[in-house]
Each structure stands twice: as C-alpha cells, then as structure tokens.
Length: 283
Image 1 (cartoon, rainbow, N blue to C red):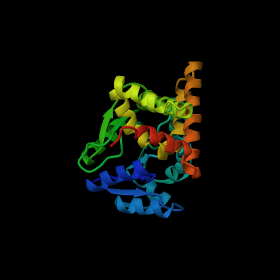
Image 2: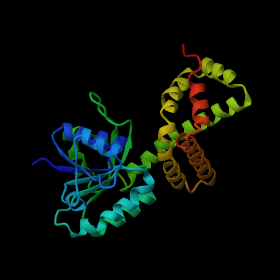
Image 3: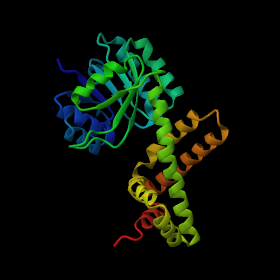
C-alpha cells in the first residue's frame, strides 16, 4: 500500500512538497485548525486533506516543515498523540535548525516509539516539471524516509551523525543567506550615502555574476525575511564555538528582523530602496 504522509505546515514550501506527493498518488494530510483562509486555500489547492492530531499520528510519515523557531514546540505538541497511537510514523524534521536543536527534537520524539530522521532542505519549493529541492537526510530512519523518492522527492542520505543533514543545511544557508544579508546591507548603506549608482556600476563592471545572483535572490528576500531571523539564530548557535562567527550571524538575524519589520509594517522604506537598487540598469 502507498504510504500516507502528513506535512506540517502548508506554508510555501510545505504546500509545494505536499502537492508533489499528492500529484504522485499519495494521500497527504495536514493540520488546518485555526489556520488562515489563505493557508486553507493553499492546502486545498495542493491536494492536502485536513486532519486531526490523532489522524496525523496514524500516518506513515510526518514531515515537519515550518519556521525553525517552531520546530521543537511542534514535536512536543505531538508527543502525547504519538505515544498513544499504535501506529508509529517516521518523524522527519525538515527545518533549518542546528544540530543541538535537532538533538532536542529527537529527544522529544524518542519516548513516543516513533523513528526519527533529520533532513535539511536546500533549494526552492518544487514546481511542475522540475526535480524540486534536495532533501538531505541523516539518522537511523533516513533510509525509510528515502522511500519517498518513489513519490517525487529528491532525497539524498548522508552518513555520519543523526544531525548531519542539518549541519549541511546550516553551513550552506550560512553562506547563501549570510551573503544576502551582507549584500543587502551594503546596497542600503550605499543608497543612504548617495552613491548607489556608483556601487551598482562597479558591481556591473567587475562582479557581473554576483550582481545577477543578488538580483535573483534579494528580489525575493523581503517577504521571507521573517522566517530567516530564527534561521540566522540557529546558524549562530551552529558556529557557537567561534565567537566572531556567532556575532556575525546574530547580526544577520537582527538585519533580517529589521527587513521583516519594514516589509510587514507597511512603510517598506528599506524594501523599496533595496528593490530600486536591484532594478538599476533595467530598460
């Protein structure tokens, strides 16, 4: 029989992953109680069915895909129903959390009798016709999670510690999203200093590939900045043995917090300035 998969929650990534699984013939459950009309509509469009906690606990896999600051509390929320359930789904934490947080989530799930896998997602939400993001997986149940390759997910099993997948995710996101924070901060600083045109011209002349990457990535960043605050904090924890690096990523968290506040607060002063910089030279 085909497995039943619960995906929590149906945000941009979760709903797209749910749709990929549903399009490949699986029954996909999610939790919609108390969610906004937009979220409920997104889940319905993805072919995901609303389910109670008890129904989620009877699935074959639970994929936790939500802002990293909520990863541990979600696992703790499901402990009672998973403990009581005769079915024991594989609990897969797919969030951008550091190895220490992975250990806390795994420890919360362990008494339930459910198997645990760590996963780090690298790439954009799946779209029709593409392979989708890479789900790097580690831990004792990683191979069981990898069976979902048959239903459209690109799952790559890593050797090593249970948290190897999250260590990779932290390292990769620290480079990509850390670089975005530095680039955006300097573009905004140049704008405030009145030499944005000069910086853009220099980047266009000497750093064409970097500028093209910034244009693609930073144009999509402001609406996602709120999710990246906790992710930068998780990365700060990941590099915690290096005080300077820890401070760097705490600073990136503060930067994304400011961008999120600007974007969601209505003024969009910084957002508009950043997009104006990125749009220079466009015909």
